[in-house]
Image 1 (cartoon, rainbow over the protein chains, first blue to last red):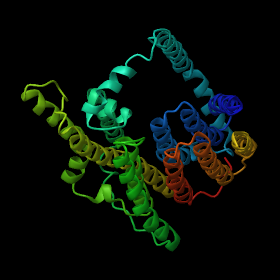
Image 2: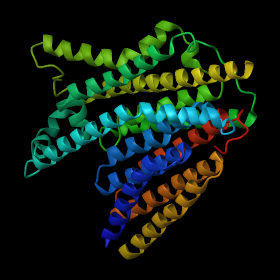
Image 3: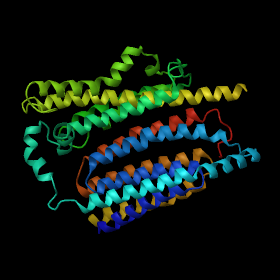
Image 4: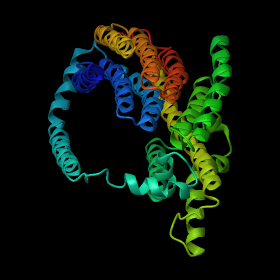
Length: 325
Length: 89
């Protein structure tokens, strides 16, 4: 019976993915992509991967949505519909320069498909490492197998992932420059917006902390909590309290790197004590994982809100330049 | 009882399919955003029904995640597009 749900969900997800790529208008693409995120989250749940579903919900519905809307605003005024000459020129130059990117994209896509096929082909029978992870679970200090794998058995991978977020932020810094970032904002006068922000900030904080803590025993964890806390930063920025831009430079840098840094220092400390990198003593593993996850969530939240703050500031400045000319 | 859950879930999924029409037509960004909010609400409803169907209460956490983050999109749209008049593009 549940085959109906799964079939409908699969058709919906693939249809939405195709349409969000092929839709003629940018706004259609973006909003179809939101719907795709929802279908994907539901699909993850049908695959019994609730951890991934929460991450998908948090990132697709929250962070990516805000970034996409911001990008839409920046793209919209570039091609005024009235000025046909400009539009024609734009599309002409586009068709010319698009051949090489298209070729690269298709080649990359084909390569990715081949790699994916090979990975599926090579899936070992009997669940691979699932049984091994299950037997070692009591030593990991947590009860949720996903958290155990992410922060204990494969901590090195998670550490690298946190580095990827930081590198993304560095790329945004490099592209945008620091001047726009440190521009202080004006607090919003809109009473409705103020009330919404005042109401949702504690809710977001509490639920993020809840997800962080529940990660020990069930679905949840640092990345999900980081996105929710990052949403606080985005909300405050939209309301005119850009605290990321206003805080002293050293404090911002500390917040951004504390997760990655603590993780690394801890890993090397245990290495110096004679173990392997990221090998925690089983007695303290639970509390250590909680500390690492908290600091990681803080760093992720700071990085996400800094990315949004910087991109949004650039957009505002571009608008000002346009309006003055 | 299972049949009831499945009928409800399929009905809600079909609701999303119907809503796609508004995303496709538009015409304004606000229309599309409201449809996305509808998807979020419908998705939460599906999640809650699924939680009952599968007997797994952790699914409610996913629903709350969708719920608390839905406000971000609305505020972002209002703030970001505030100064633009012709948002039909």
